[in-house]
Structures are given as C-alpha cells and as structure tokens.
Image 1 (cartoon, rainbow, N blue to C red):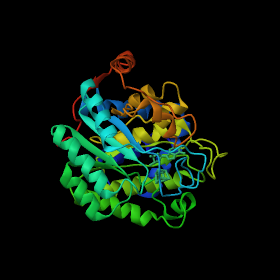
Image 2: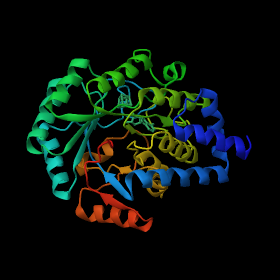
Image 3: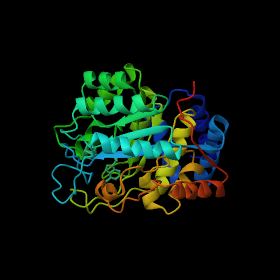
Length: 351
Ligand code: 5AD
Ligand code: SF4
C-alpha cells in the first residue's frame, strides 16, 4: 500500500465510515513499518488529547477471586491448572480494599475475578450493594464473566454501572482454538449485547498475538467492535502462562498491540482505553507507550498484597501496586514525565 492509500483508509477510519474486513487487514499490515506506526500513534494521541485532555483516569482494581470454573487454554487461572494458587476475597475484604482506595482518592472500583462458583450472583449483588451504599457517588465496574441476564440485571440494580467482558477474539473458529467446546463466542457476544441493553457502560476487547491469531482475526475484531460500539476497550498482548496448553507459545507483539490501540482510539475517539498490565509486563515503559499511542486509563491494583501473586493469569504479571499514596505519587511522576497527569474523576463515557 502506498502513502496515498494509507491516508485514504485513515480517512475512512476517522470519519466512522463503514469498513470491510479487508480494509482493516490492509491497515493492520502496516504495523511493521516504523513511519506508519509513529504517524498513527501521534494521530491517535492528538485525538485523545482533544477529547480528554492530558488527564489519565485511574481505576482501582480489586481482584476478588482466582478460582474459575472455565478452562480457557491461555489463562493461568483455568480450572485444570492444579499449580495455580487460589484465593477468594470475602465481602469484608473487598470492602476494605475499596475503603483504602477511597482514602487514596479513587472514584472508580473494578471488581474482577474468575467465574468462581462460590462467588454466586447473590454474593456479587450483595457486595455491589454494600459498596454502593457506602460510596454512592463512585462508579462500580464488574468483571466477573458470563452470567445470566437476571444476574446482570440484579448487579445493575444494586449499583453496578459498568461491565468488562472481553470478547477475546471475534472469529468463531479462532475462538474455538482458544477455548474448550463448553464455551462459545456466540454466548459471549450475546452477554455483551445483553449488558448493553441493561444500560451498562460496556467494555470489550481482545488479546493480541494469541496462538494462531492472524491479522485477519484482528480485522474481524474491529468489525465486531464496530457493531458492538463498546464504551471501554481493553487490549493486551498474549503472554504465555505455565500450567496451560500454551505455556511454551510465544508472546504477542507489543508493537502490534500499540498499533491496534492507536487504530482503536481513532475509530472510537470517546472510548475509555487502558494501558494494560499485560503491555507493561512486556515493556518496561509499556504504560507510557500505551498512553502515547492513545490510551487514557490505568488500573492500579488495590488487591491485598498477600494475594497479588496468586492472580496469575500469565507469567511474570506485573503488579502496578498503588496500594499506597507513595506508589500513586510514583505513577503521577511517570505520567508527568511524558506530559500527563492523573485524573481522579469517575471517567464516565463522554456524553
Ligand atoms: N495473556 C494475556 N492476557 C490474558 N488474559 C487471560 N490470559 C491471558 C494471557 N495468557 C486476559 C484475557 C482476559 C483478561 C482477564 O486477561 O483477555 O479477558
Ligand atoms: Fe477463567 Fe477468565 Fe481465565 Fe478464562 S480467562 S480461565 S474465564 S479467568
């Protein structure tokens, strides 16, 4: 593709015009080029600056359970991984994490966990209600997997306003290579549309460089996201995890991840897009690179220190610990060095 064609496609991308899978694929194939990558990152960053300014939202992440009934082939928390250390937080422990987060100034909490059968729908509902009762102004985000419509409705009613559920890969055949047959892409997508119908701000996303993924699959992810129109989009490179069938597969490309992130920012200018832990695990300056490619959220970890290592989705997962005022100060300093600052606001999807 020559420069002219590249800019013509960028035009379509930015204007929101319909794009076919092969258009996305052509754009994606340019990630190998230094020039195009830089160009794209700087366009994405300026779109983000225009929409959000130089603030980066912080979300306090509480990892509520490392038990999971599912057996995704890529994830260290899969039920068949006998070497995984497991824990589940009690309602009181979760509330304690939120209180500490509130002390530190956080206005959003993200409760994330595996699909733990003992953290029932009723349990999650109770926890949300308790947090909402104590902190009625703060945004509660859930990320507890595929649940029934009734459960999602009960969580929403109790005070949860946002839900993260990555679609992982939009391609049915690729999905089937990453998951056992008990799981289906169709059900996952259905959950996302249900969440939207119930009035949640919805987050989806995919891993970059998961085994056997091609640019064609990522092109399908874009087509799906165009349809879903999520308010939040999380992407990170695949990283191998011990105790999984993909333990010896190679990690995804950080470069491609950043390129995809910039494309997402240009296509979804108002979206809340985090610089993810997976990116920071692969690159020492992954957070900064993510921000400079168009991300506008970071998710510091508020989980109790003694369980952090147990939430081991993949190897060497970095803990961006911000349990203390001191580490938040470090985050502020790092952002300051690239011209950004922490925004402690709720960071809702712009009207
Ligand atoms: N590498 C990178 N990301 C992973 N996830 C799960 N396993 C891995 C892995 N090995 C991501 C999935 C999931 C989120 C919680 O973590 O996208 O949705
Ligand atoms: Fe469970 Fe999520 Fe890991 Fe799959 S990716 S095994 S659903 S925690």
